[in-house]
Image (cartoon, rainbow, N blue to C red; front, side):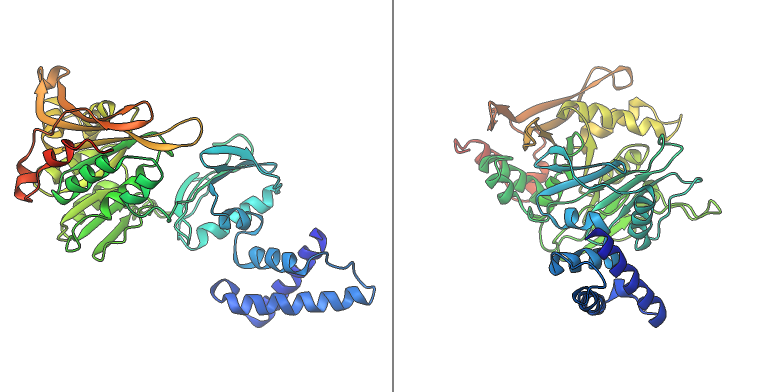
Length: 415
């Protein structure tokens, strides 16, 4: 069947070239072309001129995917149970289901992988070549693509496609999945409404982006939200959202737009809330400056614990230049960050929130000499449950300004 599908695909491509049409932008026309060629092939097969197709429906789906989708990877992209796909080599195509990886039965060639990558990058306007051997891009369905080419890799292209669970849109769904309790969800909802600055931390694939989406779903309808990301990942349902992403430099080395530039531009767009998808480097300084001006915000960061996240956020701004020191950064982090939420994925692939921390705004010890930000643990993991510890936020001005009292939620016994 593989040879028949390849033959049919090539005949459809010949027709496309002759007629000068674009099947990628017209799914109906693509299906019509494929149906015509499948019918023609079947007639020849019945006359003994070619082997019969075992399943015309499957053949049609494979040809359409090859012409308008992403070929052998399209069924994996269409499978809602698959969270991530990665290619280490032509015969090492892996998928992750419920956080657990497994080797698929798909085998590609180096040429097929290159053609798939080129097709995936076509709609993004980004490129990958010897001068730029890494690329991050968004696929049309919102999935994130990351590609690395030789000689940075040993012999083959390394491809990662991270899909996003659009089915999780709010905090109630996370409660239903057991990622957090009703009490902690209500506390986080109150924090968002009180315009608290929230730092979401955790390891890769621990659910940070999903949690950011869920948190922002409870923002006030009137809030104007500006998101800033390296590549588009956040998918907010708010009515007034502007999404910005970085841009690679051109072949001439010009035109690059960095996260630092985007954060500065976002401040000129009258935001009620700014969201940085992830801080990794010096852009953390620009975020802190924005938050220190009174603008509510949220961001994510890679860290092993909520307290480690605060330490890391105190360190990253130092990359911005020699004139930035801890004596400025540490107190700024302490005063700006109101809530830290730690996410985790265990060995079984289960994602959950393990800790919610509230910095007091104070620094113990000299800030420039390893001072530690004081913080209270509001919720912590007790066995498999996220329970209130009895701690309370000490920075209450924003809660009071919004007419909210977190002690009402935290005093409850419900989980």
